[in-house]
Amino acid sequence: MRNKLKTFLPALIGAMLTFGPAMAGPAGEVRSAPWQMWLQEPASPTADRIVAFNAQLMVIETLIVIFVLGLMAYIAIRFNAKRNPTPSKTTHNTLLEVVWTVVPILILVGIAVPSLKHLYFADRIPEADMTLKITGNQWYWNYNYPDNGDFSFDSIIVADADLKEGQPRLLTVDNKVVLPVETNIRLLMTSNDVIHNWALPSLSVKLDTMPGRINETWTRIHEKYVGKTIYGMCSELCGVNHGFMPIAIEAVSKEDFEKWVKEAQQKFASDDTKTDDKVRLADAGATR
Image (cartoon, rainbow, N blue to C red):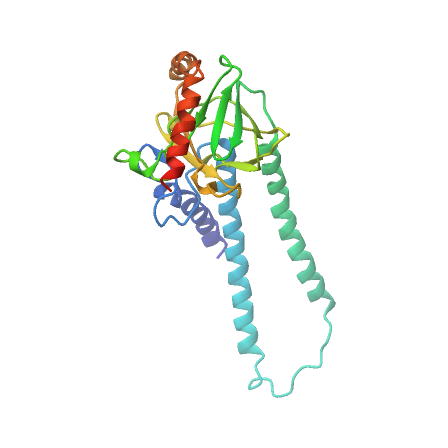
């Protein structure tokens, strides 16, 4: 029996870890697939840890459910009125009470310790290679690259009527965030009006952008996601157009990122692009 458990448990964890990524979105896109039942494909070290921890919790919860169901079935069969016409008068069992108090505590401690480690890993800010500043607005995002020329641009949802073939509805934006892979990226978040939330499930990033305050976190995109677009959206009830604040990150190599920075410095140097963005935002809102 012990050998079977040693074989079964690793296989179960492995199946849970691979089930979600196998149901990832379309080629070149990192997002939820229709009828997906697991977490999104992990694209960062933090996401890797959370997906693995979630699988471990599923194993623990499954074993607890099986044990409780088995115990209830045993009690129903072994101690029913037909088999025990004279019920026991026992009211206390010290050993049993100690066991059913201590064992759940040990299980919770076993869950809490790795959970706190993951929280610390996600919250700590390692030595950053670059910084991205994110500002929430009603209802679009503004991105600033202070370490790469200090240029900024607005990222606005593309209206349904302007979508091209293959572009996902409610997720496509006019200006994607471009980030290099295998780079420690410091994320600074704030807001110009109300509380928004910059959330990307595949990166396990989900943090409020609050007016008058800067929140900080970090991420690092795996190299295998070069050329892919990672999608997210605002996850805070920020107003009537809350559902129209998508996030799109294009992951590129470090070399391609340097080339893009040079182009972006020229493209977004003028305020004309921001004026055009505001016009497109008004047009997009008018069509909804």
